[in-house]
Image (cartoon, rainbow, N blue to C red; front, side):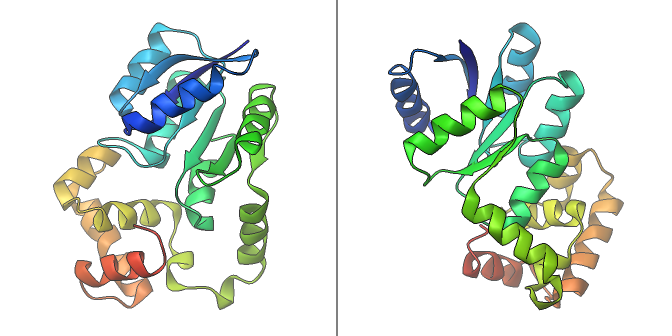
Length: 209
């Protein structure tokens, strides 16, 4: 039996997934979390075979949450279930320690296959996304400005466009305000964008909000 911890801040999605998994004899939802704090508490209190994780939740989330989960329980496989189809977001999750990445518009059978593969020690990346990652890696010089951000810069970029201020980002990523301000400056320079409003417009245009 694969014991899942489902972490997503949308109640309807969690309930839908739970009902869906009830039809499978080998998969059960053993815990639910709505934010990073709950995820970290639950993995300390209970044993799970896989963390099914949304990339975007209130508070600590995304790559930073993945790193913290792996620091607490390195053996716990993490399959990201995300609305984001941007290759760099998937790479951010995988580099932080996720074992798989699948998008929320995937077919139900694909999600089940991904869960079973990751829970058994394998890795899984949505095929279409894997192709994009391979293309972006090979032809990065032809890509959009955000591709040239480092992993940490990209994290800061995503938090900025999500409306977080410097203090909030520093707290979430365990960085100093000065360091976050430096990252913000680098992001603006690399992307040739001069204010947060334009960063937000860029994110919306490229489906990264």
